Image 1 (tube, one colour):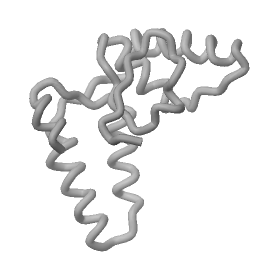
Image 2 (image 1 turned 45 degrees about the vertical axis):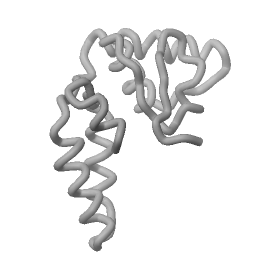
Image 3 (image 1 turned 180 degrees about the vertical axis):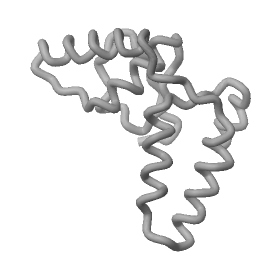
Length: 115
């Protein structure tokens, strides 16, 4: 949360991430954890601008998928969408999932969560 405050006004969410956050929350069983996650999704994530997966991102995504496939590697579809939105806007992607994004040429990554 400290980094959220530190970069206040500079953070955005790619549309595919917004989908994953809301879908994950909606699927959770009712209870305190779902309530807490729901508050985060609505209050924190919901307050950030959402960047669309547009034609520029789709072009980059196609190039990323092609490059990975030619190298004999896979790229989860949604991860490719997220990376391409960040790249289309010249942004750094903040993620815990460094492994799936590593090696994508031109993508800047940072892990605020350790590990």
